[in-house]
Amino acid sequence: SQLRKDLLDAFTKADGAYLSGQHIAELIGCSRTAVWKHIGELRKEGFELEAVRRKGYRIVKTPEKITADELRLGLTTKFIGKNLHYEETVDSTQKIAHRLAYDDAPEGTVIIAEEQVSGRGRMARRWHSPKYTGIWMSIILRPNISLPKAPQLTLLTAVAIVQAIEELTGLLPEIKWPNDILIKGKKVTGILTELEAESDRINSIIIGIGINVNQTKEDFPSDLEQIATSLLLEKGETVSRADLIKGIFTNLEKLYLLYLEEGFLPIKLLWESYAISIGKKITARTLTQSIIGKALGITDDGVLMIEDDHGKIHHVYSADIEL
Ligand code: BTX
Image (tube, rainbow, N blue to C red):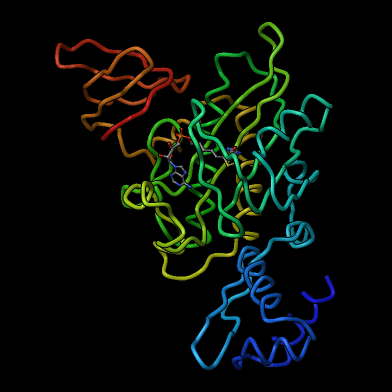
């Protein structure tokens, strides 16, 4: 609206100085209530405003919005991210990706959103995806592989993300089988792999990636405070989401092409070098049982092997792991 533009103009001209509610109201010709309303809207958009009694308001941080142009600039991949859908607010990027995949979107199509109101994890769990702070995206791949191999793409994606984080920030994330990326034991990334198939032919694999990038402690709801972290919290400075996204596209494409050419083995070796649980005693909770034992590693297909106290080796295809 015009009022919003005038308000932003007023803050631009103030150049970091405080503006009182009364002063703003006079400047842009509206009521103080209208000023409050618009300031509330700005906050919702990701602006941080400091309010000081008797002085007024000051913008201390603008939202670090990603633009599709910024993502395209300098992107050197052949197909991942070439077809890019950028959205402000969505239910879940997975949902959109499924629809696009069904409509024959080309391989490498990516859907990125600034915010998800119904972001989801595995088994219909919620994935907290607040505005402007993280990377919430889904990537469509169409590999010519058999159905049981699909989970390998989760492991491959985890490697691509760990490498990209390491290259950009110097942080050293670790992978917890199958789909968590942790820093110092706290979750910084979740991966959700879903697929569309007809009989045993894969039509498309949709890889959902959620990365906590610039959240502060206050940005996490209380139930996540102890278990989640962000790159900002670990690094102590903000991290460019656009650069990280581009790094992930580049690494993912490289690994994916290697995988199509040489199979899972080279990916497995890389994956193992980042995995935390191998050799440790873990508990794997599947839908039907809990298996306690030593994680031996993953098979050449990406299946987790656990040896229980009786020496029996269990093959785990899907589970939640506790270290
Ligand atoms: P998951 O089932 O392994 O993990 C979900 C669990 O992680 C939740 O139950 C909660 O305890 C915790 N959690 C929720 N939000 C966060 C967060 N922001 N940071 C750390 N921990 C959290 C992991 O599932 C797969 C997540 C994929 C998310 C992407 S985002 C783009 C795409 N769209 C979509 O709806 N999902 C994927």
